[in-house]
Length: 302
Ligand code: ATP
Ligand code: MG
Image (cartoon, rainbow, N blue to C red):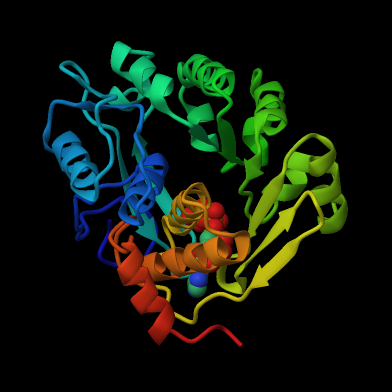
């Protein structure tokens, strides 16, 4: 991460890092730290960036048995610099890195064979081989009566590419729980108004929709008609990267642990807000007691 705001990386600037990161890793870290039993299918290089990530997830209590190590390719990485308007410039090394080599290894298949739930992130669409593994995991988890959640995490532009639109639709049709943010709700539903989009997705078999609204908080809609809205926690936003992933990790873990939607939403809002108040994509993830503490001492946005 650049230590100064400005445009891009075209002259030498100060950087700080490396930080463990990647949307799925952020999700998994938060999910594990709040008490969820979670594993991840991934591939890192045989280098310090890979070790940094794997050790961090292991320390959080995540199952890293299906994180492969490539002897040939470096760990995926990203350099980010914030502009003064809050937008970001990136230099990515993902598509030609170890991250692109994820495969249905025996360890990954063993993980699918003991999972009761599958969470899919839209970032998987950026990795060519990820779709086949996703389909295999879907089949395995579904065959045992497991459930599925999906965070679209997707830009409209990507939908125009190849089979992405069809796969995106297939994932929505397979999901019990959807976690869209902003426009993704409308992209997912193909309808432009919130209530209609929610109704359209329920007709496709989704049972629960959690809508992330950044500093405006979040809402959960249930197919039976239940709805809860929660304001965001009032924090100073130091680094917004990872908010949605922390939110999702906390929400899915809480629901799997048996918490009701309103209480899961409270923890998810807290996890997102706590993470944006700290520099680094997943430096602000919290344990359940850290989040309880955060909730007790942080006011809500009025
Ligand atoms: P990302 O930007 O990581 O892709 P997202 O767009 O999927 O995230 P957001 O809506 O930005 O998701 O953030 C998820 C949740 O985190 C919000 O619903 C909110 O609860 C919390 N959050 C995010 N930003 C802030 C903020 N500035 N202040 C308080 N809470 C926040
Ligand atoms: Mg956001």
